[in-house]
Image (cartoon, rainbow over all chains, first blue to last red; front, side):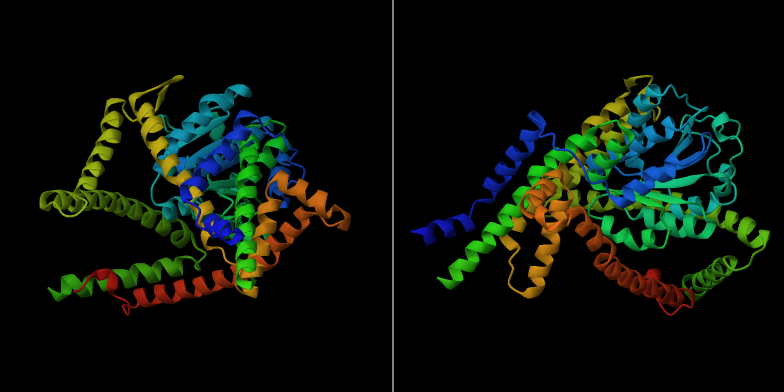
Length: 274
Length: 223
């Protein structure tokens, strides 16, 4: 009898699992669990400390290379880092190698600068989409205006107050790449290692373990990983957002995965023996 | 014909490859600034042509499928629908996604079509991962057990509820799950990744050398 039920459980219709996951993901959206996110990741803390220690007026170049497919993890990271930079009165330039991310960048800059009373061309600039990352990354090492002579609105960048004194990597306080692709590796190789500009990163949780070697050798000064990293950073800057609400959804989703793996393996273990 | 189809392309690859390689090691402005800048300009022009070529190739391939009515030809229609659904709004709104605080037609298409479709495609993965984990993750060997333990610790360590469960059940040990996760990420994971990186890099160097010296010629096609 028990054997019949356990066999039935193992052959569960996958649509039932889909339904269960949907319900579990909806619960925290309707009623947040609100569990405290106590342990901040070491590499995430390093990003925060690095930006926190920059002097006001410093220049940070942020490459936002993600599109809607990785938006839930990376968009909150980008927003949190830009908020932090604005709070520290840093000058911000944003660029992208992905045509699909232009809309997400517009979305950030339609709201976030207003929170800190920051003005386009004075405090920040949004550079247009560029293809051919190798050429762009190496060109930024000599004269960035030969590639980015205009911003996304078509206005000349060279005379903008935000670009004052900026010609190449030597004049930048840091470069940060937030991406769901392998572009962070390329940034480390073509910009960080070659031109010795401090590199920071933000990646999806699934890619995070791959950047350990760069962190250990100091090729990356810090790394924000996945939604947990976004939630950590939001906590550090004291402005909670979708990273924090998203981690609530992950709470139950992760537990479901663990529960299903453990249960199915326990059942199989006993079925083999009895 | 051999000169145009083989000798000249091979010579171009050899000269550009060697000069780009050497420019990295010659600390002179002519090498590290002027030459690299000129090459970057050429690179961007080639990328622009590659885009156009890719687009034309995509259109011809799918047009051929529709014309011959091959299996699944209906899907090819969506290539054109998707292309037009983004390109027409882009022309109408002059490439602007927003004017002030308002979305343009392109902004609407981005938010309501591109954004929604991509988010849907990716979020479906979550359902398949959970279902596959349940059906396929079988602990049949010591290696699979180690993999499971590492995965379980990482899963728990990445969410506050995992921390809560760990503290409730194993808090008496004095070991924090965040410490274990950090160790896994910075010792075994880094060791494995570093090995992979070294292997991949050596492979990339060898392939590059073979291309530069004309030993590897598959990129030139059959001729």
